[in-house]
Length: 64
Image (cartoon, rainbow, N blue to C red; front, side, top):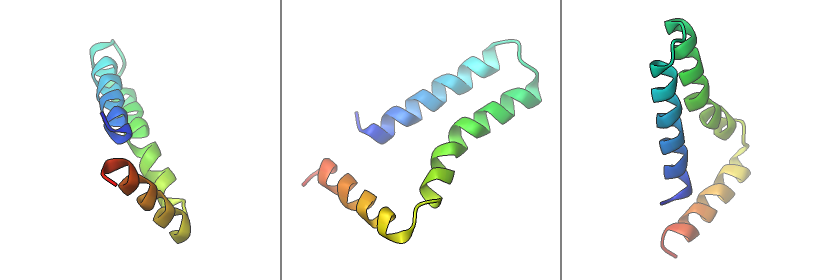
């Protein structure tokens, strides 16, 4: 499984647990948005050279 896929699985597990546990609905949505939004915000905080480097590293891991 790719490293990015692990994040997706982890976010899905957290989302399911938050909605199963007796947590107020608004809080459940905020937790879910935080778990899913944190990596996106982190990516957009990178400058262009860091994003390009990250893309090169991902391409090397995928197939060469």
